[in-house]
Length: 250
Image: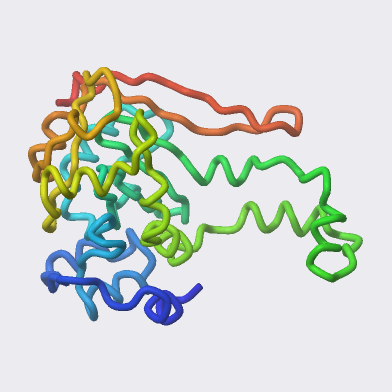
């Protein structure tokens, strides 16, 4: 997908803020150039009824440099924030074309690209081709492996993240749609604000959320983060979880 196709599908960001020259310069080489140009032309603002906000790396820069400093085999400076959800899940772009997310309320870092790159070969690969109306090529397995190892498409990521329907499918513990409740009880979000859930809360209902500025929310993130990534073992995907203390760098 291209920036033009994303723009056609989602339109310009709402209540967009023009980014400064310093913000634009600091993002060089850290996010796809097409995205940086999009920010410079259209600014950063919201989509999906204020449930997803574009941002430049500057918004979370110091925080991620500090909180991810002890993550093994990962350099915090290689990651750059480019958007965040109303519930505080931050999208991160890795220089190598990888996609990570960090959930502020539970301090969870997920390497999403590791999951797609260790997806096992589908058992019904031939049926998938047949359903598409084409014959399965002889090199279908090689094509599958090549496709799963390709760099991420940031516009596909943003297309999914800015879908209003996806936020309608977020439910609280009682089975009620969560984000409409939060808007009613806490009000709409402005730039650099999220609905933040207390990590010590006993459940996931609207009563446990506050509307906080990003600067207030990051100050409440735990000194212990959880890192989730996938590895391939014997042709099968395994999810690895690590708990990492960040107290020594905070």
